[in-house]
Amino acid sequence: MTIPPKHANRPGPTRRQFLGATAMVGAAAVLGASGTAATARPVNLRPTVKAGKVRRPGANDAIRVAIVGTGGMGNGHAHALMRTASRGEEKVEIVALADPCDERRESCHKACVERQSGVEVQHTRDYREILAREDIHAVLVASPEHWHAQHVIDALEAGKDVYCEKPMTLELDEGLEVRKAVLAHPEQIFQVGTQMIMLPKYQEARKAIQAGRIGPAVWSQTSYCRNSTTGEWNYYAINPDWKPGVNLDWNAWLGRLGPREWDPKVFARWRRYRDFSTGIIGDLLVHVMTPLIYALDAGWPTRVVATGAHIVDHAMENHDQVNLTVQFENGHTMIIAGSTANEVGLETMIRGHKANIYLGGRHCDIRPERIWVDEVDREEIICPDIGNDQDQLRLNWLSCIRSRQPAMSNIDLASKVMVAVDLAAKSIWTGHAYEFEPRSLRARKI
Image (cartoon, rainbow, N blue to C red; front, side, top):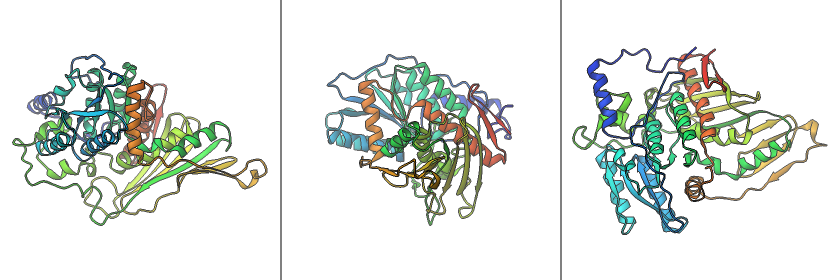
């Protein structure tokens, strides 16, 4: 049984709308947004650029990076990469920017020119102009979620190494297309921006589990919870000077989710809207699920059920409280809580038959179950302070571009995370549980 897309009950586009939307997608590249969906909707995302040669920096060359999407995350990555260069941690230059919003793009461009002496920085509304350049080694995709898949596929086709902001895609069907593209380009580096994978405690937990220290890992729990007085993601400012058709290409930003009337709230705060994001699940919970899935190494998610509620923020389309249950191939079950209405979350831990691993702090704390205290010793594995984990993830990407070794937050891990994200979102909106079949990469409603 195939799962209907989130937009399945909407009337189909007229021929004029369809042609207009097609023109938009081909016209200017951009940021997008994300949706909820579950998967199994037939999709065939084809590259919209010509195949390019893989360009690798020489040992003494700077890694030349282009950024697609210069909103909050893209601008933040730009400044972080420039700090990386100024601190001498890696030779890296930002040489191109793409965004359909002139104000955002020009602001980021000004900062890049001022902080990178002598570096010429191209900026354009059309990301395909950047991908056509053979002197660019890598592309950082920081567009809204509904554009991730196309931007990643096009960047890979153009021969670039890719860092993609989380979640990898808006919907699982797009994620599986990205997976195909990454596997079809094994010579290129692909990283997803889930930075907590760099925390040493998860690597120590993985080693402890694989060594049989805690017996079979039975179930685990984690969460990402925060609170606000004004509503989550409303801190993204709305600029009254934004003028679609003048200094902003709204249709290009919408891409496949257009056409629709201009809405500055959607443009600035798209994570609050169901069509454009899975909200808490894709924006926040991916951070805590990714390293825990890595530590457990329990296979693919095979069954997902979730609930969501509007408890405080009734103006937000996406939910301000979500609870997920995800079961994996080996039977392990993960419980995940997310909230934007209360900041007290669950303690991150893995429960084993013989011992439990506590991961709430910086270290990996293994404590035996009462009946196994004579066989299993308590041990606190002291983990180093690595500083900013997002800085470390970017450095991992840059290091992999040099060494050609696989990145930490890779396509296999990201694909499993997308199964959990997408099916949880679908479960919330439909009220059904979902199963996923790893061999066929298909999901079905239970």
